[in-house]
Image 1 (spheres, rainbow, N blue to C red):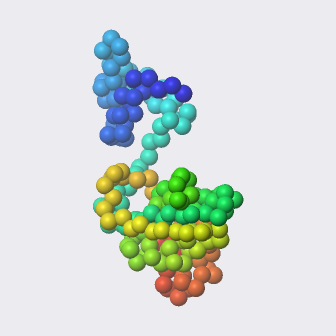
Image 2 (image 1 turned 90 degrees about the vertical axis):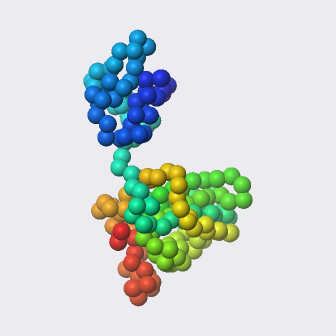
Image 3 (image 1 turned 60 degrees about the vertical axis):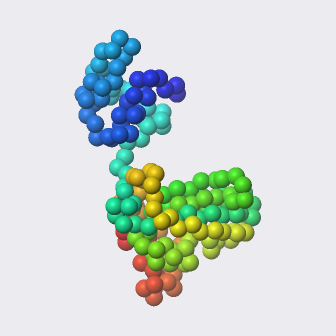
Length: 187
């Protein structure tokens, strides 16, 4: 889909305030003759951007304001098949806020969120991706202060986040059973 100047203006306004009314957006978006757009015209454009997966409006969360901690796990993988397994296993984990293939020494980078450094350590040591087959080398970078973005998309408060999606089974995990780990369902 080709994005024109009006689409760019709409996206920019929604970036700054995702709750902006269609009428207000219409008043701020200018066509070539500097007339404002109708709210119906704005709605049509937003719908088209959403249908084409160019835009998604969602509620994002401030990690800093919740006093949550985060880290990046860098993984060097044995081969592409093992990489695909990790991606499949952790793409729906409620603790994962970013998962990306990268080029260079490492093959994957995974952003993880937790209520404290201790919880991040327990997650990494007990059920995190560093314990999986096919990992040649891993490195963990704890984030001291996440500056940009201020808000990130996290699905930690939904019923879906209460389920274990990574393939680990809390009910048979020693750390969970001993109380050392709370599991992923307690945010």
